[in-house]
Image 1 (cartoon, one colour):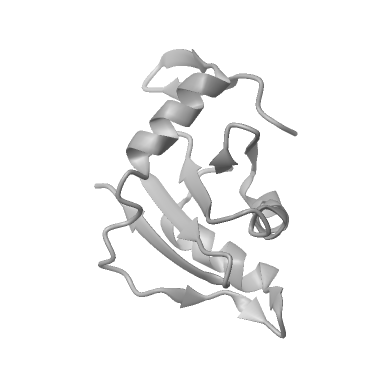
Image 2: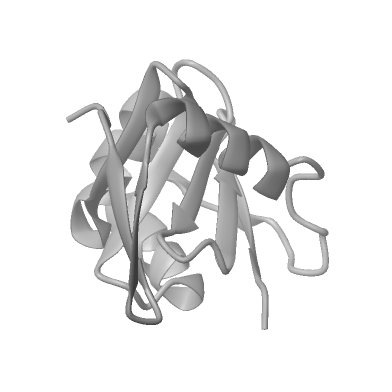
Length: 122
């Protein structure tokens, strides 16, 4: 499901973001990717994305029920965190995949070669 608008609930406020706004905030959030303090994780097994390892990696940084999986304005999906590995696997064929929680306090990147790195803002 491509995003036509994203509704964000944050501290009793509701904000509706258009695809352009989502693209802008993701570009700002990922301007410098992740800071590199955390090690890269291998997420591949036998040439395929290991969905179990990917989900464990996501859950280490994101405790929310929903995430935003983003490559560009044409490839952006809001989904349940359990569905994210399948979408990440599809998007990896395009280029580096960016994942964030809906409050934009955690961000992860998954590289097409099958490694990922995350960062959480406190």
